[in-house]
Image 1 (tube, one colour):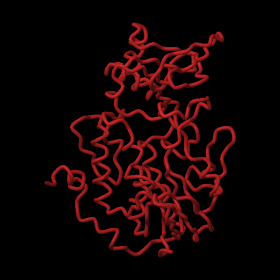
Image 2: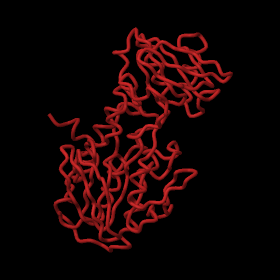
Image 3: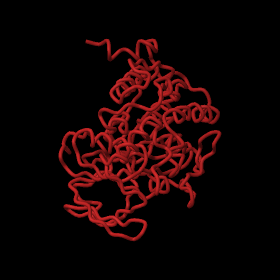
Image 4: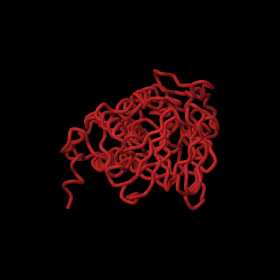
Length: 354
């Protein structure tokens, strides 16, 4: 059992880091538990990805995000968040998953499991859950979805050169994957259950995907549902009831993702049965469980397009302001709060180091 923490943050994504930084600024004793690596979801984005938002809207901790591009790349974002974490000396335990939270307000026990199976226990007065949503895909529930050739995440296109690839989905990720695969020599089929592509596709991507479909470079089946995936094919049913077999080598089921609702329920957070939104005070971000706060996209339920880094990064200020009212002002913890570098120096430190 470890010493009692003031704040334990679950998740080291941009929002979790922002919460931890605010806690450090408030002189609270804080620890972040992360099941993967720093900003794990961003790390798992496609290597060549460019953000849709501008760099200043990704900033946390009042540290400028310097980039050669107006819209930064995944690599630049990873470098930036490493720099921020180093500047504030954010204490993070990696490769450790929170499996349970017991106790009550001001006296929580947090159970974790390491990748090697070892279990640990921490005590904390307050808990912030900032676990995001990218780790749990929305499953289609069809036979063959668990085959090795099926992935719910898109990486790089090269290995699919001259292969038959199905992309399932009609939103932004599916459009980007289909275009990238096509331009790297794959034979691409796009399958979407709705009669039209999603309105959330970015304005500069939509004409590209629509024109590739129109000219036949990308074959598209809209208003169609996947009914089965086999070793060498994908079966779909069209709106008029026709069953079609499509020869296939690989499948990217980019059907979206959702927060870990089961984990939230296990710790006592109420989930709306219609929207899947957790019970959360919009002013303080405290859940229905006193002392447990929610931050970032985990608040949005299944409406994950409502909260991004751009707005989730501000939740930390709301949460820590409420915690300060509850716990009062804390004396400085030197091991956590010595931040010798100026913000601009911290943002540049990795780029300048030999």
